[in-house]
Amino acid sequence: MLRQFSAVLLGALVIGSGSSGCSSQPVSAEDEATTDLREIARAYEVVIAASNRPPRELEQIKKVLTDLHTDGLVTDDPEDVLISPRDGQPYVIIMGAAAGDENPKDILAYESKGAGGVRYVLLMSHDVRQMTVDEFNQATFATGHEPAGG
Image (cartoon, rainbow, N blue to C red; front, side):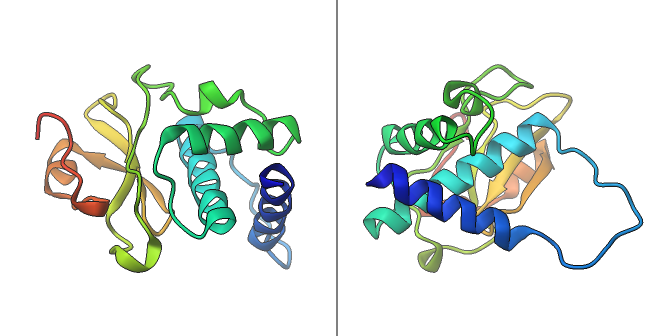
C-alpha cells in the first residue's frame, strides 16, 4: 500500500514540477548531492502523506526510497542516495520535522562534513543549497536539532 502510494505521489510531484512553455536555454543536470537531497525530500514527504506524520526513523525513508527505486522513479540505489558523494558520509536527516511547525529556512538534512569549505543542505522549503562553514554555523535547524560538534 505504501509502495503504491509512494509511486502515485512521486508521479504527481514529478508532473507538477514540470514547466509549461518552452525555454531556449538548455536544462542543466543537477550534481549528485543536489539530486540525493531532493530524493530524500520526496521520500520524507511520502512518509508524511502516507502516515499523516513526519518520519521518526531512517528506516521509513529507506523503505520509501527502495519502493521508488523498484518502481523506477529513483534511479540510484537507495543506500547510495543516503550517502554524500562529496564526503562519503551519510547525510544527516532530521526526523520528526513537520512543515507547518518549522521555519521554511530551517535545515532538514545536510552533508555531515561537506567538501571544499561548503556543505549541501536541504531546507524545510525543500530548496537545496550550499552553505559555507560560517553560514552553516549560523543556520537554524528543524526541531531545534544541534549538529554534532556544534
